[in-house]
Image (cartoon, rainbow, N blue to C red; front, side, top):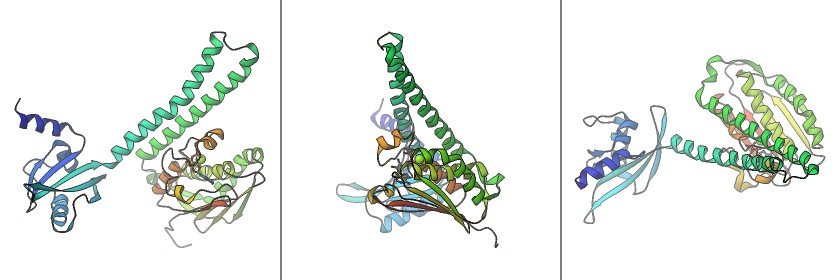
Amino acid sequence: MEESTLFRDLLDDLPNGIMAFDLDGNLIYSNRAADTFLHISKSHHSPVIDDRIKQFLGTARNDDVEVIQLSGKSIQLHYLDRFSNGLRVGAALYLTDIVDRHKQEFTANVSHELKTPLTSISGYAEMIETGMAKPDDIPNFASRINREATRMLKLVGDIIKLNELDETQIMEEAEQVDLYEIAKDTIETLEPSAMRHHTTLSLSGESSVVTGNRALLSELVFNLIDNAIRYNRDNGSVAVRVRHHVLTVRDTGIGIPKSHQARIFERFYRVDKSRSKATGGTGLGLAIVREICEQHHAQIRLESREGVGTEISITFPTFHED
Ligand SMILES: Nc1ncnc2c1ncn2[C@@H]1O[C@H](COP(=O)(O)OP(=O)(O)O)[C@@H](O)[C@H]1O
Ligand SMILES: [Mg+2]
């Protein structure tokens, strides 16, 4: 096979888009992924890219990165200068589908998270099966198996929720939901957990109706109060407030160090993995909260101080005057 054909085939097999332009911004090469991202055929142009590349050639520096929206996808454009014999002869663009990349990372993380409990379940089961476990150990091993299996079920449940959130447009069947009622119900549900953690729950404010999906809003409130209980201290408290389309959950807990605050809404991100796991966490609660907020066009605000406590506020849009 001729070398240039080999390279062309290789470039066409890449999941990332590659495009080359001359100094006037004319397209001289694009691989298959780029054509697919941009829905172009060899003889056509993408107006968005034409526009970006003109701008890039005029102002951008080598290695500049920008994210654009293209038919519902977030595409990262990585701009590179092209040189020949030390002279700039044009530009190249390297295109990555960001969501795709996040999906790959997510899949890798899921596999890892599932493997840990499965390994310990099969380890304990094997010891019981082979008679290596003494009769006295069996109740203890059985309860560990049960605990790990429960954790896995929760994890799988959260993953399914995230998947559904990725795929459905929930606002199409939105209803009027009273945040105060939801907060009240959720506090009742979580009261036993609060007692176990020696934490008190309180609710203040007034009825406030927002447009959204009841089940998802319950999930959101649950995840915030659940965290406020689980990352609290002994004899700590959780104060929930609902007022004028704003829900606030404040706790007197361990707080979140500044350096972690920007990342806790990412999937599987935890400040202290062992504390999260010991209290039954999956690392997905706040990622679910973030998705639900996005679907409801709600804003999240986080204020936290280490050793003092955390306050998370969710502000819902007001669609009408009341
Ligand atoms: N109220 C809070 N106080 C202190 N840390 C918190 C609080 N809420 C969340 N976090 C931190 O953010 C991480 C991510 O939260 P989340 O997505 O709900 O996962 P998890 O299953 O671990 O609770 C937690 O592991 C914890 O480190
Ligand atoms: Mg949580």
